[in-house]
Length: 418
Image (cartoon, rainbow, N blue to C red):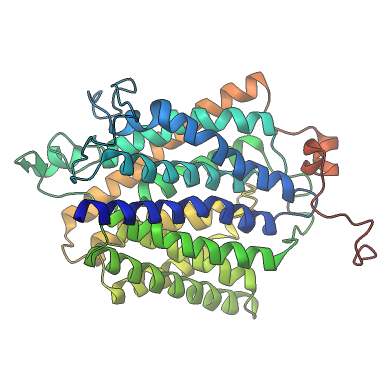
């Protein structure tokens, strides 16, 4: 009965997380200009179409299979036959196939997050090639390193075990990444930064104001992301018990505090609070609590979320000062808040210690270095073959042109005169 209840919880949580990618598409799509909204939706949905196939053929095995190679990745051909996982128990006792499903949805959203940094100017063919390469070479190895018993995990053979000792196969100081602050947000945020630098800024960047074309769409996407995040964080407890309830509550209050933090800074800086600021702050709070959802109290979660909102809001303008075009603020929201949540758990968790802060810092830096270096190599190879950047004419006319459709039929719309 317990196994059945756990399976039901993981199926529901997986469905919540699966919804996050369409939700992100709406969030990003509303922030895009009207002539590139469909392209943004397509980039997110492309991850939803490609990653599940990679996952069942080699991705899951690469992260959680047998025969770890120096703690970096497992054998992708270690023989998981998903027709036989119905009776194969995981380490938690329930059938392994539930883990396969749950982890698949995480890999999908990690890829989709990256798309926001290169919106409106990237070849769709290049993006289709980038997705399977990145999820194979970056995401799944990082999942193995952090969650699969690799170099950045709690195992005796990890960096933490080397630095602070181990006993009984486990490091004395276990790194904390409850639901993907490192594996999802730091890796995707770093990749977003690298791609934004490599693709280059949009034409007219810093000279023209590029405003979101549909803020109600952004707010809808935010609400759906928050809904899906309940499965993302609470589902990572891997059972419908008290830990899941704590993670759910911490997620809710951290998101709320993140929204308030962003608005507070925005009000101080600009003199007004915006719907986009509230939406972005909510997401920043969600990102920050992701690695810490099971390790904090509701009170410390509010502190973490509020500080993440302040931090991300203050960093958005850096892209103008440093002249890199992170179109939809992926670096400020996902990378910055992901790093902050990963580091802050060492200070705010009940088992806080200088050793935990140290290993959380090492894990965050290692993930950034790994994702950054391999993302650069993948993007360089794609740029040398099919090219990363849209041609000037298509970029000027709008990336939606490459899909042969437009988001709105202005000719028959009563708003066409606007």
